[in-house]
Amino acid sequence: MGFGTKAKIKIKGRIISKGYAEGEAIVSKKKISFLGDVDPKTGVVIDKNSDIYGESISGKVFIFPFGKGSTVGTYILLQMVKNGVNPKAIVNKKTDVVVASGAIIAEIPLIDEPERDIFEIIKTGDFVKVNAYEGWIEIERR
Amino acid sequence: MYLTKEEEKMLNSENESMRKSMEILIAVGKIFGAERFVEIKSAQISGVSYKNIGDAGLEWLESINARVKVKTLLNPAGMDLERYMEMGIDNEFYKKQMRIIKAFKKMGVKLSLTCTPYYICKPSFGDHLAWAESSAVIYANSVIGARTNRESGITALASAITGRTPLYGMHIKENRKPTIYVKAKKTEPAIAGLELGNVIKDEIPLIKFDFKLNDDQLKAFGAALASTSSLAIFHIENQTPEWKDFEKPKEKIEIDTDIVKKGCDPDLIAIGCPHLSANELIKIAHLIDRYGKVRRELWIFTSKHIKNRMLEIVKKIENSGAKVFTDTCIVVSPIADRFNCIMTNSGKALEYLPKLRAVNVVFANIEKCIRIACNGG
Image (cartoon, rainbow over all chains, first blue to last red; front, side, top):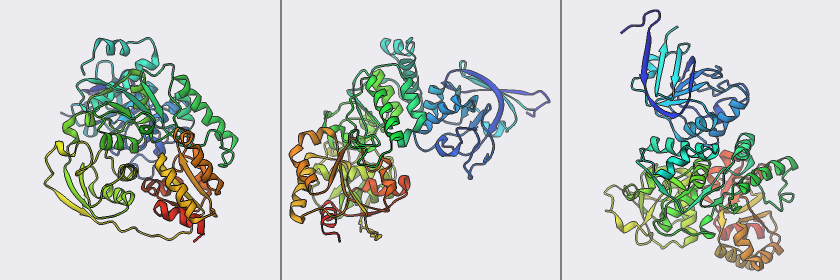
């Protein structure tokens, strides 16, 4: 099935942190540690090994496989919210405890275990709705 | 995930901290496929040092408005709460650290500030716990036979507030089964732990040592093993409480550890990672007696609980020129930054100090540490 000009795809997923948000997608295929890999003042990815090095996740729907590294990363999401540079929502392939708890305490909607391969379907710049009350995401290619 | 009526109530609580605690634990339960919760006997929270959690952690802790439901202990902070000046801690760090301590106190957490909570409140065989300090987790599971996963500071606090942990991992007997049989030659337990963790990764070992380890050696071994692996349990043949409950693993390996000596001349000798037991303090006092006056910086770390029980011994040790600090340790405090080369008997410190504090390290057993501290060479 190809995308039409206004094609939309809806994918079901598992609710981890409740909420709703929509926005531009930023997609990374690499795991990330919010402690050390992201600048909590700007929301810019500062890990040189990242495939989105130098890009900002601020105000976007952040799509990545799962988190890694120190549990202190949990607090970083909260600090990003305070600095106004947090991702609007998160979609993970399979989330981990650090990212999940971070999203919950920072009240960032998080869905994981999407029923289809999100890395095939979603590209950076696509418009994505994350409904983590009902458990689905919707992708609109731009 | 199945929730009892009480758990439902906590999830729908008007108290935001309670509600979020429950949400975090349900997320953890989903991640690990837990079907329900289990009630815990105690919790132990990590992420106490301002050096580690920073302003982000501090502000979050201060925002919590709930009291813990079960007995809850605390990992070491970044400084001795009374003798921070002697450690070279600046005023800014002191203030931030005290705000963290105050936030925990408000929640009803016991300010034990130790990585050896089992000396203060020893769990019983089979108790379910939510402990976070990796060396305490592996000790509780392996040496005591209690049951806890390796919690983060946040999940442990959520469990403290709700009195629950999701039932998965180490809480289920079958998951505690050894999967690899290890023969360890006579060696320093701390070094054997480091080496084994590097070799086996996530396999649960059943180990055959050619000598019987005492409790202090079990502590040192486990702390080292947990620092180079994500393991929460080990078994030792003819010794630990659950080793006989499972079939002997078919896969076998041998470890032969020779200590790699990267010579650096220590400007600090640090003992007490994990915090010293009463017996270890006595041993140090005897060794200092044997070797005379302490001529290099010798810092010894234990809990306030043990120190207060051993005041005479502590006084004797300090009269020799050594310092006995409490509430903190060499790994979580910023003090290590000031030194070039730290000698330690701790496998855990050997693993973490170069990574976290960018200092050189050299291993020596407790006897050699004291000898070097006294003779100077």
